[in-house]
Image 1 (cartoon, one colour):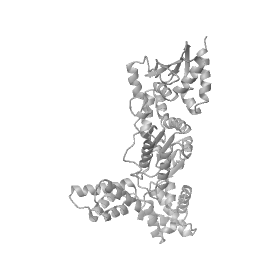
Image 2: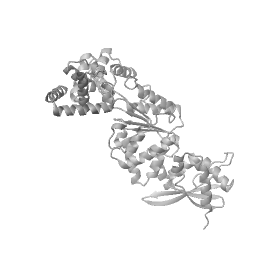
Image 3: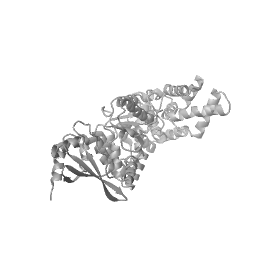
Image 4: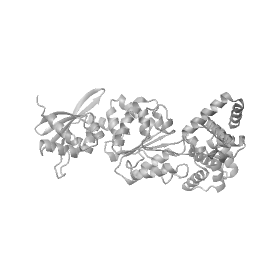
Length: 477
């Protein structure tokens, strides 16, 4: 039996292996099967139309050079593309005549793919239903309003914003890969992730940027498996230059989704592409995710975003009313910033509610109206207890200055008050352990865990201490 086609392809692979990254070689060349060599036409089989198009787009130069070397100047390459339909594999041939060395002769397009196959090809290549697979045509799914220009910097987010700016200037080329942003809901991590993507697109128009939330990614994967298009799904995501995956904690308990993302992550990272991930918790506190994924999340920078302080809240409101062209008294801005402290989303919601009340009822925006709106919001939302509020209640209860909780003193009464504040913060807020620690004495998550264990032990063994906890708990409700 003539094995010339295998010998020629094996010789080509030796050269290709030395000239492309190992992860790219395994992904795009190992699955190829040489079928036959007739005259100067080598026929290879590839697993999907997406695969064929990506090879043409990314690797046609090295394919043409190696085949010319092995076969001669008149070398041609024919693809047999497996078109899966309800589990049955159909082969559709595509023929490519390599361009001349001068580069003046264009590539031939597919010569025998049927119209229905082409229509199906368009539908399966891109989960975002954008015709064709040309990278420049992929919609990044970014919100233009979520830019760096509209992101208010403060002590609460300075590290994360600075890292985001560095990534935008050199995606995939910094130590911040992946860039892992975490915070409670409504503090701006999604806004910052969009801002990085928008800035990359402005600086590097040729790069493919894509934002997708974890739930959409999971649903796309389930649909791809159902339609026997898993390879197309995998290859689509492996071609992205900057992948922004929002709310990655939603992968918890989804083993198959985690597995496919693991392979996508590895390919992108090893290819020098940028990953930006967001979550409501740092990797060390995430549950339901495989350890191999969590370890990769820690490879780059993990940056938390804290609740905004008063000055940052005030600047957010001031900028919003300015951008909207609305005239709001300074004292109203101050009042909203003082009373709405939990997150930015609620802060902006309070302002919108206030302006709506003013417009609908034809009332001026006054301090009185502002307090009515604040009281209504607090009552309707069962005001979320903040770490700051807990610290204040605990400090007042033990008659100590709240600032003392943040000192390094080892005085027993201060240490115990700090531990109690950490205990209630863990049980009554949605803050991560790392976030609680940073707000109470700038401690790490391990210190918070130790504090909670200490408090639980004392509740069981010390009657007086148990009374303190019960009494403070009543004051916090």
